[in-house]
Image (tube, rainbow, N blue to C red; front, side):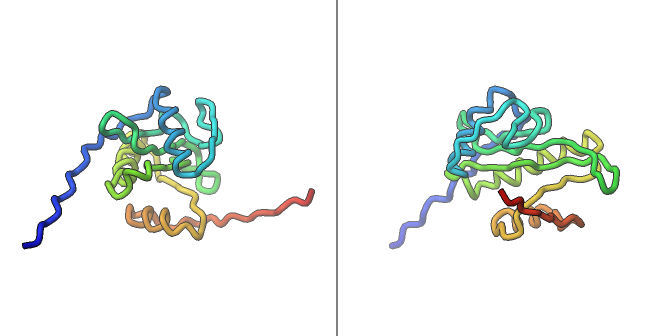
Length: 152
């Protein structure tokens, strides 16, 4: 007789606004994802984001994911918009819908602030983030990036 694997228990994740006390755990997750040791000030440089527009996912007493966002005025249509500067989930907790929960919470924060849209810049070859954003009803925008390399 075959034994059936026990169903994976749903992880109880709380999404909340980020505080300064979360920064070290956010950096730790970023290091796990990127392999880089990036330090930043409270304006989140170089990771990007504003503390008041950033959110974290926590469960089991620790931060499992983050979304760093900021507000801006779009230069091409003069609308107040939100920018997703960075989103990350601890690799040990992928496939628990943490990224989706972060984005849902962030979306509600943006609606409460009366913002017109949420924008995210993504590398054109990013085969993980592009499908993720499309699954959340993001569409391709009108801007295309142009780069001029500078010779030294």
